[in-house]
Amino acid sequence: MPEQPGERPLGIFGGTFDPVHFGHLRLAEEAADSLDLAGIRWIPAGQPALREAPRVTAGQRLEMVRLATAGNPRFSVDAAEVEAARPSYSVPTLERLRQADACGRQRPLVLLLGADAFNGLPKWHRWQALFDLAHLAVAHRPGFAIDAGQLPTSLARCYHDRFCASPALLTESPAGRIVTFAMTQLAISATRIRALLASGGSARYLLPDTVLTYIRQHGLYPEY
Image 1 (cartoon, rainbow, N blue to C red):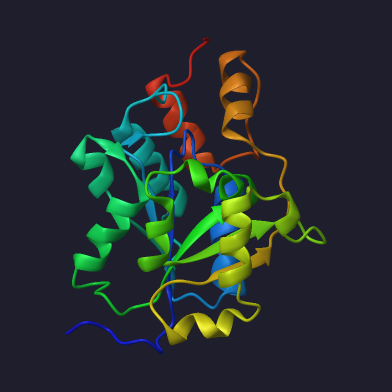
Image 2 (tube, rainbow, N blue to C red; image 1 turned 60 degrees about the vertical axis):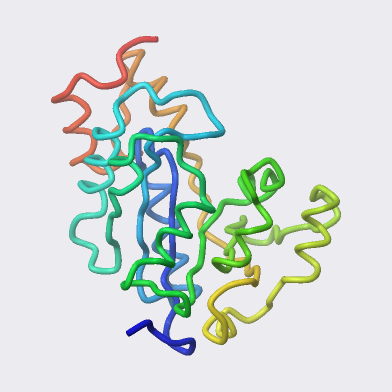
């Protein structure tokens, strides 16, 4: 039976994760706490639609996410986009989740985004349809809330109409609202990690040891 509004929302965290690092993990962990989410479903993209092709295989990125999230009972990993071997878009992914018994059409879903990704939302495939399928939660730096005046015009209107100051209200409907939350700032990027690894530098303490070991064992991110 489909689950009903009023239960704790499920967070949805998609991305390339090339490679997954502590910035990703802190965003997911702090979103779960700040928004009182029941859990976070990580969804590595099979073929990212809005960036250049990753330098490792989709299966390797999936395995790194599994290693990074292992041991956290609030985290689960969805392999469907990797297994589909086609370009990944958020709207079709959310439509797939809505058709699954585990999510159904009434459970509140919350798509997690960083502020930069949110600012670029109008470039996404069918971006306005996202609000029919999920709430959006946008992470920002402490003390630097989202400034609607700096958003693209169409997104600024959407933000004004859909912003919700209380995450508790996310339980009242399955989709359609925008919330924000402050997260600890970690100056970590996948681009920087790849550059360090390619140059023979140390990426220790930027990503989990299990992921770093996997990268070394498989010779990932050689010089490019």
